Length: 241
Length: 241
Image (tube, rainbow over all chains, first blue to last red; front, top):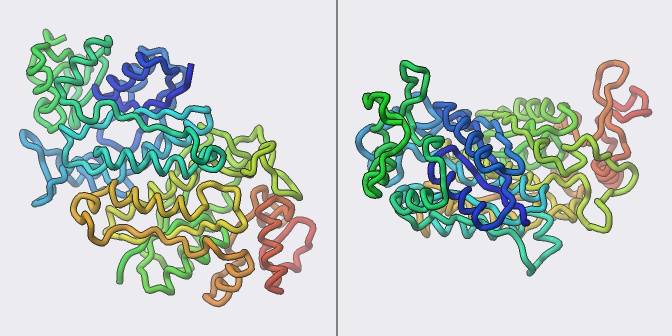
């Protein structure tokens, strides 16, 4: 059974990408990041998903992307936009874009892969719902694959032979298609977390805001599929679970 | 004055690359890593060099490459080779190669650059003395440049226009050539640190071992130039400074 590294954020996209890697017969090792994002809920969700799928190894890397700032997700001076996909004024790039985040994440995945003899890396990026994110585009994924095969031991020893493959199986899927695929593969969506701006409910449980870009896209996907989103939302009462 | 990001390890190569960026008229921002390497001396050296060159901003990122292991520099179970350039058995790649390290470092540099409006990134890699390191080769640097221009805001907004440039000004220089260039530009070599396996001397000052790959290459360079290396070595007495 070949090892694969799977980047798991705790969201439903990467949970589905993990389920697809498992279904594809890979022995999965998962990697998450505490990168200075506003909330820690998604890091716990990633660990729960890794446990659910009985991965071979789960590592959480702590890095400080707040030191650079430049995104509503890592800079407390910038507000998370609500009820519209927020951009940074004239640009097509959402203000929730975190500079070079996927490049950083894939670089660590490559280090993890190289030391574990894995040549397959899965990332749950999506070019449909996040069309403004430069590092969710197919050409970025292809360029990282080329880099990976020059950056490493394999680049020297396997020149021209089989090397690293970056799998982005969701890249051209709609959110509804991802949810359908996840349901088919038994992804425990109740364990996933997507909200950029969650609050802690009266019972201590995390509640999604229902109004940030990520919640809007997620809720739209579940609506299209005709299935109730199992996570709790603010103002929704406790019957949602 | 254009901003540039300069990766500074505390060694003499990156110190010289920093001096070259300064001499080239860039406003420099420096980035160092505490990545789980065996010794902290080089992190302090990087900060001293940043101060010496009066950079605009200096960030030290703490990351844990020990979680992956796979190198004599990040895995305490692997010994640092002495008196020969150590490889991992049959391979041309030294055991001091840290998997995907330069990919990780350049990724953070890219995040730093993107948030500071810098489009020039300097890295002191060298393909001559470290010929076995996959991520010190010109084709790796070129591939990272292509990736950078797809990964970021500039990749979307400046398509076809001016984008990121990865500068590796030392890549084809010998150690003696680097030392000569550094002397010409006033690099304070006494503040640099190269040894993979330093010890603390009786007076609390860090002493280089003189026998690891990095010391051997450094000492050979100073010998070729005909200048005494100003750092202290084990067994050399205190007159060396």
